[in-house]
Image 1 (cartoon, rainbow, N blue to C red):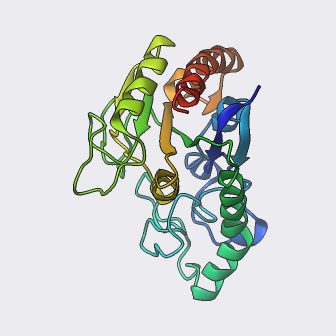
Image 2 (spheres, rainbow, N blue to C red):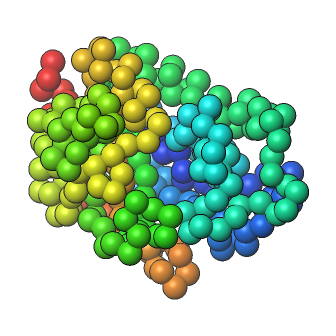
Length: 260
């Protein structure tokens, strides 16, 4: 039996095409720090109706940004979350290169996502990420120790609407039930802090909301399963976390099914 939702994992890859790599100022280790470590292993194993995973690093093109977002942290990032310049002098992508990357790397993912969401059996979109255990310099919470799970519905810390952010992508009562499901699986949980939801959650959440469906961004703390000395997932910890996530997502699937 498949869970009635779509899983999106837009930042799981660290791969850089050769033609892009030559222009980057970052080392291999620094590039790896922009990867949502462990997300494909953890969320990709869920029996969702469909799981979409990124093929390329967010430094090539950020799938969780609007295609019209062109600033330093736009769809093609110029600065990473540690405040480092991504490109060598003179290698910043021009308009033609930006459009080429959108065509090759951005639109194929979003076209697949739109097609998956058109499935009438789909009740929700869950956009899944991982984050550092402590907020890095360019994050909204630099130096702050984070919870195990962060659930985002584009709202405030209680899951209610924040006028500064716009419409919610999931009703507060559903978000609170999801919070309970993750807490029952042994995770600490925060709502909309430090992240309330990126482009994928907000953009598709508006569409799904009109259909009585929901979109939620889910972040998992890498300190639960990453060996910080080598920045690699620990296999045994991954297995343990995967089991707990399966318990939580099974409960979420039941909650979504009960809404019919």
